Every structure is written in structure tokens, then in C-alpha cells.
Image (cartoon, rainbow, N blue to C red; front, side, top):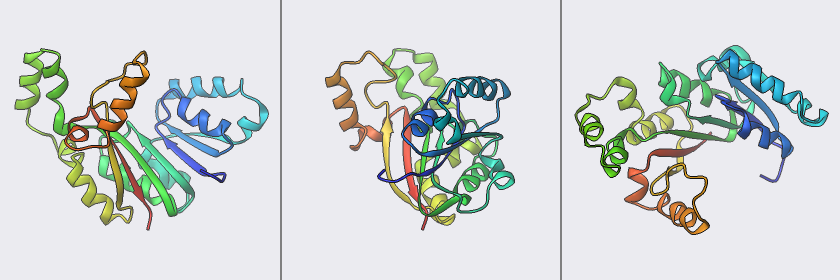
Length: 208
């Protein structure tokens, strides 16, 4: 990122990701539907230097509410990390995120890998949960969140898939993992078949 970007983080969570981008000099807008999280982030933001506060603004709402806040083409980078899996209407949420991307803008999505839900409990020896995951009837949102369906939908809304990776193919959420483990994890998450059975997926689309 060699220039200052206009960034939308839809689903701020604790705001750590958005704050890193603001500290790096980018203009960041955060959407968050949880009032408690929004209040906590506003309190944390008050402790930041004035320059960072000036580059960071928050709005109450979710990805499906972008039309109420922003014009089409407002952002260069839109982050929808752990947003679609929690949305009651993931297709409307995704369309809302794509709508505010400028031409050439990047859409970054992180979502649960619904096609591999039995993997983690199976590897952990939790056979009851693994069986339940295998036998569960997929809901409408599960069908939408499959890689093939998302690839098709992104193409239809003008943000075709550029590339995708796995997240948590081998090392899942272990901040104490040694450097070698992280290196192997990064390689696995770029390769088939490992990325296809990772805990989560990281997708990138580009606005045409």
C-alpha cells in the first residue's frame, strides 16, 4: 500500500485491525452494530494522538447498512472479516460492501469454512461434534458461504474473485506457535488441498 487509502472496516470487533491501519496513515471508517463494542472503541480512540483520531471515524451499523451512510465508490479497501458468518442476510451484506468500493478497489473477506466444519473436532478426537457437523443439514447461509457460491455471487455483483487462501489449515489460533510453525502454516494456506480444509477462508475480490 504505497498511498493513503480510504478504508471501511465493516464489523470492527475490538478495533485493533482498524487502528493499525489508521496508525499507518490511512483514512479509516469503522462500522459496528454492537453498541458496547462501539463505545469501547470510541474510548480507546480518545487515547490516540490527534492525527490518528482525525483519520478514524465510527458509524453504528453493519455491512447491510452501507447505503444509509456512504455513496457508491467511497472506499479503496473494504474489510468484511468475520462479518458474513454472523449476518442474517449475508447476500445483502456482501452486496452492500461491494457497492461502496471504488473502481479497482479491494474487498477482503474472512469467513468460516462451512465445508470443513467436521475437521477440527475430528482432529481433536471429539467424535460427537464431528458426527454432528457431518450430519447437519446446511442452512441457506451455509450454502451461500461455500466457496463456489461466493465466487459466483462476487462475479455477479462486479467484484470478481482475485485470489483466496485458507486460515488455520495447520496451526489454529496459537499466538505462541514458533516461527517455523507459522511459516509452514502460511505455505499450507496457499496450497491445495490444505487451504480447502482450513478453519476459515480469506477471499479477495477486485471491483471492475
